[in-house]
Image (cartoon, rainbow, N blue to C red):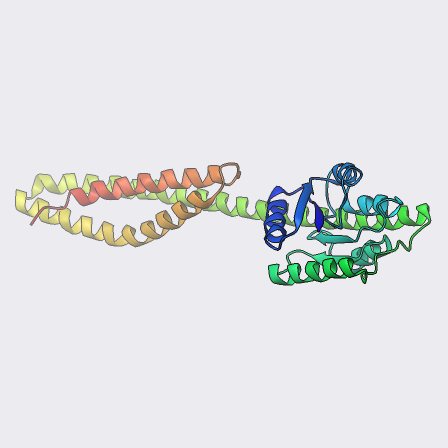
Length: 277
């Protein structure tokens, strides 16, 4: 038995080919409806499994072309989609003449069970091949346009939500960067003030007292900075490593990482001043 699968996603094609080939079916594949029509008119197939959202010619158009062709209309047509999943999408697909409407993802065992049952029914002549209910071109065009507009509206809404989410994330990163810059400046002032204080004390104390004072100060600074700096540095580095290079947020993360490194160097410089036992 020979199956044609149609999907513009090569990963999906590969997975279906592996799944169906293991069950003994001969499988051919195409990337859109136009390619599928050429293949259908040059070879014999027992079943068509098609995605809906594809370039050049989508699955709805392909199904209508197949069911309108006397040489192809008896081939069972199965929609397998992750984009058009509403009940209205399913109803429209069945009205075009599809035999089945499956939503991605379907568990492999369940999916192959459905396909095997269909193929067995095809061999026994028991499968009721889908007959197109919609004959009027204007009605088909109207319903097709409704499904397309509905999908575009959902895509636009999803896009707006994603843009808003990214803007919120960028704003949060910007504020965090500003806070970190202010913190770094204040820390620099504190380090400078404490360093000057140490130098003044160095002139008044004997060598042993000088190292002891520096050691106490280093411990206080380390206690104040080590934990928050470790948390900030570790959290920021993990986010930076997981952020894709083309993500606009990465430039803010890079600035934060550099500032944290600068802080770590300053803390290290202070700790180096602690006298050895």
